[in-house]
Amino acid sequence: MKKRLAISFTARMGMAGAFASAMLFGMSAHAQDSRLSLADRVSRLEQQAQNQNQGGTTLVNQVQALQSQVAQMQGQIEELQHQLQEANDKNKVQATDFDSRLSHLESGAGAATANQGNTPNNAPPTANAAPTTPPAAPTPPPAAAGKAGAAPAAGKAGAAANNATAQAAYDDAFKSLRAGDYVKSSRDFRNFIQQYPDSSLLPNAFYWLGESYYATSNYQVAMEAFQHLVSQFPQSEKVPDAMLKVGYSQIELKQLDAGKTTLKNVSAKYPGTKAASLAQERLRRLQAQSAN
Image (cartoon, rainbow, N blue to C red; front, side, top):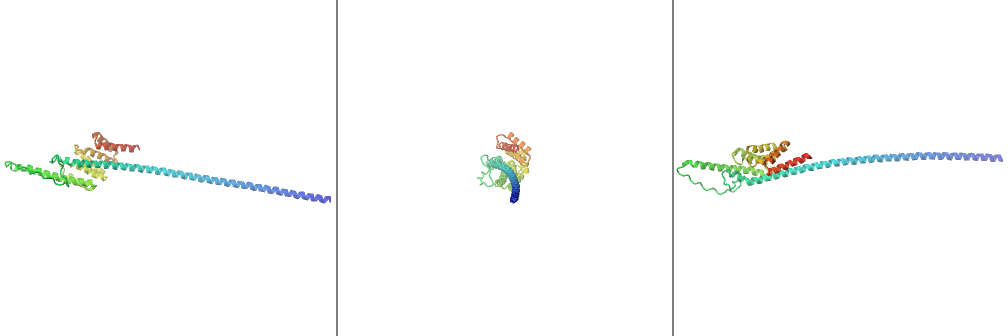
């Protein structure tokens, strides 16, 4: 009986040990599985964090690239605005200059031809003006004078007719200029210069010939017309304006140093004139452009 009890106790103890061993093994395996699962989770979290960092870096780079493009576009916009302002200023100066010269010519063209035989208080007839009352017939010369007195009268009549024809041709060319038909006005002023080389309107004709070319950006030919006026008619009232336009033409032809020198000469030689004021304004604009 005792022997059976001993065997039974031993068997039970063996079973308990086996069960304990099994429990320990199971717990060890579970712990190992837990450690592996935790490592995988940490690894996955690290990978996600890395991906997020990479995505954030990419986003930052994209934002920086966009900011750079915006800054570049802003610079281009400012440059275009500056160029547009310069063009507007240039057109405004040219329009003011052109209008002032037109008004000046309209008010002074009559005086230019007064020295050709017209009375000082009467403007010369224009191409479109109504005919004035014809002058009284000249007193017949004495009989003793004979044909000798008729020759001067005939000469004066011929000169007056020539002056009237020249005035009409000049007015027609100027009319084309005011209408903006610069091709016709340049052609008409050239014809006037060739047909009436002794006319007192010749200096003005050279000036407006230059303006006709300048308006069509033909700066080289325009400059030559202005320079001819300055050199051949130094006493003309159009010389300051012609010198100003010589400077403008030189600047447009990229002859900046020569243009600046010419504009400075205008200011020095003709202080207080409209031409001197415009020359100083253009010099200030050139200086501002150089500073930028």
